[in-house]
Amino acid sequence: MVRVRFAPSPTGLLHIGNARMAVFNWLFARRHKGAFILRIEDTDVARSEKKYTNQLVEDLHWLGLTWQEGPDVGGQYGPYLQSERLPVYHDICQKFLNEGLAYRCYCTPEELEERRQIARLTGKPPRYDNRCRTLTDKQKKTFETSGLSFTIRFKVPEELLVFDDLIRGTCQFDMSLVGDFVIMRSDGTPSFHFAVAVDDTLMQITHVIRGEDHLSNTPCHILLFHALNRKPPQFAHLSLTMGADRTLLSKRHGAFSLSEYRKLGYLPEVLLNYMILLGWAPRDKKEKFKIDDVTNTFEIGTMSKASSVFDQQKLDWLSGQYIREADLERLTNLAIPYLQAAGFISTDENKIDRAQLRLMVDAVRNNISCMSQIVQEADIFFKDAVVSEKHVEFLSSEISQSVLLSFYRELQKLDALSPEIFKEALTAVQKETKVNGKGLYMPVRIALTGREHGPELYGIANILGISMCNKRIERFLLVKK
Ligand code: GLU
Image (tube, rainbow, N blue to C red; front, side, top):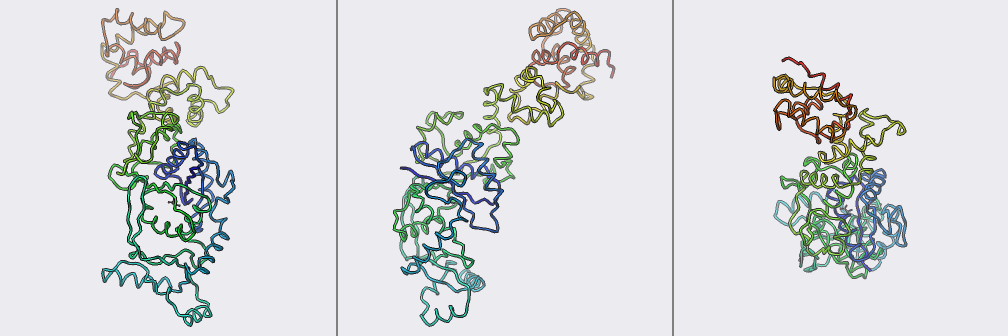
């Protein structure tokens, strides 16, 4: 059975770049009816924080991802927090020492740095020179009794290591360029390489899907899998996501963390859809799809080797498509907290006119790409417009005034408004004033909303109702510049 894992380090908020790794692991598991596991790599005590673990669990759930094993759901290969697995790493490390696969290294960080500098100056690879591998018994004894701290290093064979990556094809690494690497730090915490390989072995991971920034770590992991008597999993190194300037994606490119996107009111299925487009495309090249549509056709081997480029505009375009088609009741529920925070509607849910709110959301949904934008778009229903000087000038022209006056007179004849009635009133104005097109509806639109663009005029008038329309038109009757 396929078993994959997402193994984040909880050192910050989950960014769209690393959330994408979770998404592809999850999709791969679904595709192959396998298990998706969440493992938290929190052995870097100084940088890891519990709040980030909690947040990423929440964010991934919000996105719609589920996992069969993980810190919050348990599972038979737990614990799933590396910080709770220290005894496991120590046992295996001891086994490696006993079997002669690893050794204690007493070199200090200062000595190592000095040797790295020299290697650099002499044009040699800055690898560890393996000197503690060949300590004599006498030297070992002296170090041991001196109480010096030590790390534990894995003996790297000088060989050409070859493996097949599901995306990148055959990869080769000359291990003579890699020195014996640390598997246990002097403070008793496992190194990244060691913890990953031990956990992938014990958790029976069959496929490691991760960013290509880890490609150069893979040979070290493969050596460890061999030492653990385990056939290495298959590897798929995904290309990374860049900003438009071709540097690694960051906040600078307008890319937010998942929780920020959530706060801005993006729908989770939009982000899921968009992240899958970063590096993959369905055969029919459709950009908007449901997960179920692509689950059976997703092939990891067809993912792009080239890095993908994050494009906020495209995300917004996609998001707009989803919002236009989303269930109105759902959108209305999502809109409420933003409108409450803006002071537009009551914080008491019982006092909200939901029918009216649904009309408003429906009227503006074409103009927004995330739900927080509802505040800017729907303010026309709640506040009298602040009209710019340019617009006052426009409204005070003879033509605009004749339109507004005629429209006002029409309004006085009515006792109810609907999109149809509004349309008829405008037709009557057109007949009376002989003004057509933009000249006809723009004065009305600006007087009612203070803007040249926005939701459909008939819908707006319907939501505002007669008395509000009257009031807003009155403001601009007989205006003089
Ligand atoms: N903790 C590593 C990271 O966040 C995981 C690497 C891996 O997937 O093996 O990059």
